[in-house]
Image 1 (cartoon, rainbow, N blue to C red):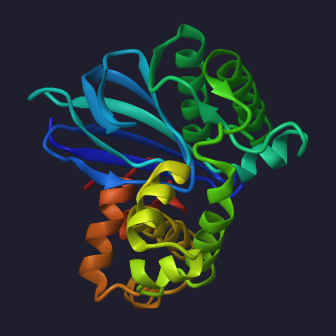
Image 2 (spheres, one colour):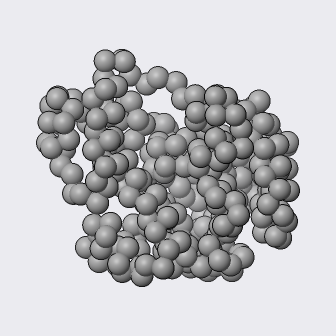
Image 3 (cartoon, rainbow, N blue to C red):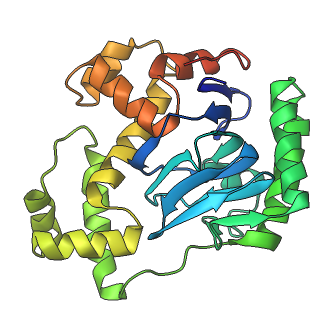
Length: 276
């Protein structure tokens, strides 16, 4: 079976994207997202480097990636793996639950095996794929998140570093978000933080869970996903986001999302019909 991926994005369910893929040769480079990722392996072995170690997920296992945390993704052996994933923006929690109940889901274990979560994720995928009404999909998502919280999630991410570092990190994150297309330098950001480049690099990674460069590109990719739902051409999006050309943007986008920008754009207005 050759590498392929099917993505579905429904406009009536903002902040929710589902992917079903089989990868054998394809590997995700080290990257991060502004959304959480919950994956389910259907067959084969999935492997990824995450939180300083390599984790392998087998059939019916679920793997998790927290918002903003760096990770890779590849087959665990020469046979490849087939998996489903749910990309969940934290705005979904604020929309479906009490604002005071959730700030951000934080997954405790990288890999777990749980029949209820397995069934819930499959049911949500199939509901979105077969065109069930918005209300039915949202109810399935609420049920899944509640089961997830009970088994493998905390409502807020734990503190990573000494509180004295957080204002500096917040300033750097704000600078990146305020001008995500800028080619920031570590020296420039260190001046904003009021510390040496070396110190900032270490503090930022410890606090956020990803190096500054990976975090900055995750922000840029989040903007790209929104822009791809507009009428802008892909080449215009690439240039507006500060990439040298469309091919560079396409390569980086696929390394983040598993599909090309063109295939992602198709997914926003069609069902599972996307091939690499």
